[in-house]
Amino acid sequence: MIRSATSWRGQPAMLLSSDQLEAVVSHTGAQVACLRRRGEQLNPLWQPPWQTAEDPLLAIIVGSNPCLDRFGPAWPGEAKPLHGEAGVRRWHSRLEGEVAVFSTELPLARLAVERGFAFQGDTLVLTTSVRSLDAVARTIEWCEHTTLGDPFLASASITAGIAKPQPMHGATSGSLDVATALAMPAPDEEKRGDIHTAPVLDGWYRVHNPALGRTLMVRWDPADFPWLCLWTEHRSRSESPWLEVTRARGMELSTKPFPEGKPPAERATSWLGRSTLCVVPAHGWLRKTIRFQWS
Image (cartoon, rainbow, N blue to C red; front, side, top):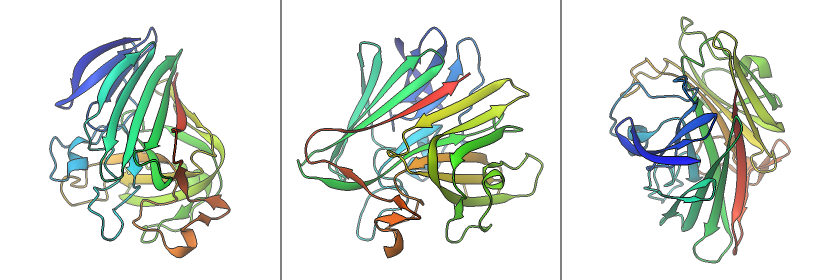
């Protein structure tokens, strides 16, 4: 692996390179901003159309970002940022053999976090490890929030190993079948914005764009992330900085069904036969791995 300093959308970042792939990881949030074949510019990951935003997370969000120790707003009485501290903290990087390791501490959540990036052929392997700073077991919320964008998203077909998706309270559309929920509106279709979640049956999803000749295949252990939350934003949000121009599809691997605050009692520990809890042990690291194959 070759590691070199760079910037992305005005933010400091690190360019990671292998003989087949390149990935850009931001120092704020340790987000995967870009994944591309060497010598190409095509990037399947979402790039916001705005340059600045008042919200700290929206000001720097890009591509694929970690949500720790919250997925959604802070619970009542907390002063944590949206989706937790991990996405807005500064991370430090080092190279350990063929693995680029980004690390930080979350002072409010009392967690240490490391994200290791490695290449295996046409696959980026991301392993995130979480440890309690206080040597006590902790129950946390954890989401790996990957967002896809155009031009790759336009005309792409999406399949996944999930059960029937369920709508988040307040969503603009009701319960959808798997194919309908996964399908992204075409650029010229009417506005749409909704959030659904689905129990994971088999840990994979596939996004294929035949016109561009590229496929993103993502794999994970469903025991690590038993929920796939689907966020569809198709020019539906009028407030700044969205301004009814954004197209994005979130493919969000999560330990929690929805990006809500404190879950209601019926989803506090399990829902639809799937766990909604994630426990960090008192000692040692809790590790979860995702594989992004860009072929």
